[in-house]
Length: 424
Image 1 (cartoon, rainbow, N blue to C red):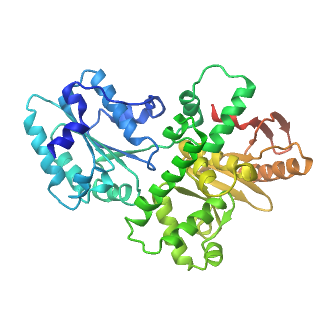
Image 2 (spheres, rainbow, N blue to C red):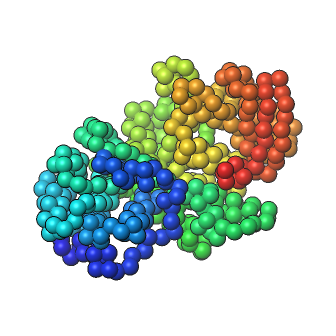
């Protein structure tokens, strides 16, 4: 155990450690929550960069003068920790032993990576918080049902939460070189982001074949370690078929009954498996907006994937479904910035509505191009209907390259290139 701790905490011995390309500027809430007593829980899918952000936080603390001995890091994916995952005394014992070995330290920082791998992590955090000792806990988790719900029930009032996603487009540009880009270079970068997504390791990989292999591996890891194993599911094939079905229909209306009929499953089974996929942050559902929450829940929803790279690697061909990939990309961007995202469906359809403080504040359509007159008429009509219904004086159509402004009776319709909107 001591050997593992020493290997995972190289700063104790003045050794360098890799903290990757800095992402903390894109997560200001981490710096805001760091000085306060409450634990900080970072949630997100595997391989999205949570561990690296922990290392960057440690690097910042050390650069600000915190003594190396004040930082204790434990990656609970380590086999020796997993072998004692059901030992209620493991974490508390390690904490107490380490604190006692460093009597000169006034404030400790404890980092627990993949906290859900220990059955008693929340009890250990609660006990440490309630002890009154000067300790800041920073944790990561890959499964909301095992981390977020547990924290809400057992750590009420003792934690703050932040979500970590794969790279945003702005981050992607920094990772892939940044600098001033020509229009052709911008389009090339955007195509790469749309095709391979924003997982940091994938973005940094140069070989296209390895990018695809990594994405398939990530899907397999999430599928097995955050869906199959934790829930002790026996029929792997059913789960895989449902995930493939959902990914292949990303952006289309999705109902439990429809999926059940297509896959010869029960609607309850589909509902159960989909909840596991959403808890693993692999999939996200978007409800049709209705003032009645009950009606929202009975209407078909739309399913989007965490990352367009996984959609391309696992389900359909990139070139055949570009429009729906663009829509998925917009959803990912909106999800980072807004808690409430819906779609509009009346006589016409609008891809996204954003609600803040109980009110719809924006309506967005997504289309690869609106040069075709019929496509333009359809997209504009759906946007205007959403604007009328929610009293909006402005709406947005995102395309690959077109831009402009249209003045309609309902208000202003702005048309903008998606890559430029993502950079804002």
